[in-house]
Image 1: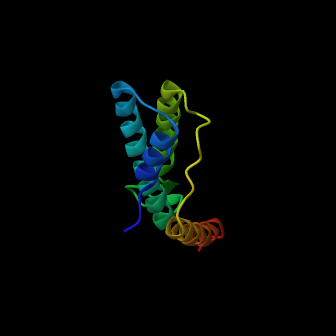
Image 2: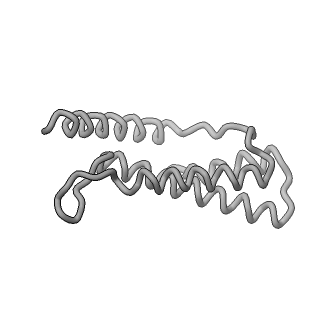
Length: 117
């Protein structure tokens, strides 16, 4: 089983910094947000940027604005912790491979939608 982005983040941050209890709670919240972002990115890659609406019309996938909100939330938490420029968390080989596959699949679906397929 691979580590999640959130657990890798917590490991890197706790190796680099010491956190008070209230800061640790924020760190856990940031980790959870990272995991949610990761899950939404995978779901978005699987479903594509355009989905069918309730009446069959094409519409922007609701994951897109949800991801934007989660990214802003993460940024706010990191600002509260004062670690916006903290140590980068490097993705594992499995995470890089999954991301590359998902990006390729999304690109193929998007090209199909853009060309009326």
